[in-house]
Image (cartoon, rainbow, N blue to C red; front, side, top):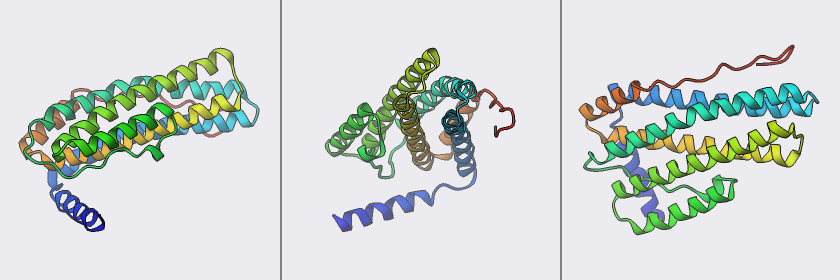
Length: 226
């Protein structure tokens, strides 16, 4: 098992050496866009929780409302990216080894169960290409679960102006799960760009540019950090 893991890491490293030139630039552009959105979500959630602890519930709810708006606008774009990746993954002849999601990385029970399912099915399918497509489906399902979970709980807190520590902790934990799924999406996009011939990689990049992400502006606090 130890040798197999070392060999898999070596194979993955050899594949990553192929990410050069324009393909590397396209990957970095997409990675930057995804990470900027998740950073904005994390910032608004963190800021909302800190302001709530200081006793300013109105300002905390304002930040939470912005975080919900970012999630709502970002989710379709992320699902669109995963859909494009699924489509282009049919065109590759070989794929670098992929790893399944880890249950320990998630807080929501549904996500933990989904990661367990990914691990089980990962052992059943044979090729790296099949495992890659399986993981994309699992990630897309997870994005829908966590996004819906987050928006439901954010709206519940906003409607009731809740200060319950438990309800706020649920939002923070779900936000971390959403960020983990974005990280997995970035890694999967990298694997796909490595495997695609330059022409197809260029076509994928052009397709993604047709749907530029839009994000609401971050609110500023009176006398506090943005």
